[in-house]
Length: 156
Image (cartoon, rainbow, N blue to C red; front, side, top):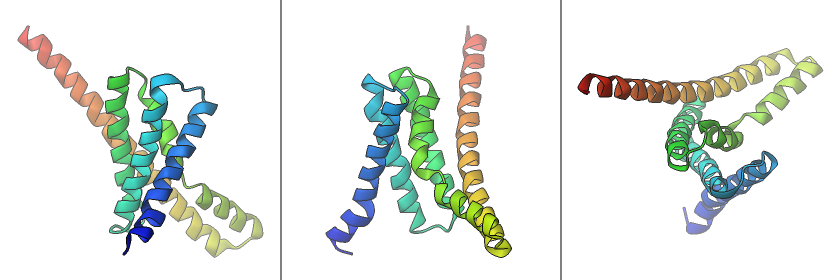
């Protein structure tokens, strides 16, 4: 693999993800010091997906990308002092299986039952992997914060 293939297959998609996330940030009126970290979250999520997609099948790469993005969002929310959803929802857009949803509906409307079911299960698997990855990190962070609060109360 030469540098041109790496640039075309790895760097450019991450750049497009950054630009897309910045665009959605502007639409949702995210401004100032939050704009660049949101775009970098999109780069992170898509980069992790591309790296893991080369080694892991199907929804596993989406799951790991969602875990990485959720961790990044939790950290950035504390650094920038903003809600986690500011970073999480915008940077999640590149991972959303929009094409899968479209083709599932198309197959359903055309009456192609076998392709409809295959596309539906694939799309639901992807969406489920994203949701579980986010839920896992969010729950772990809440548990960690709660345990830290309990530890502070006991030591006082």
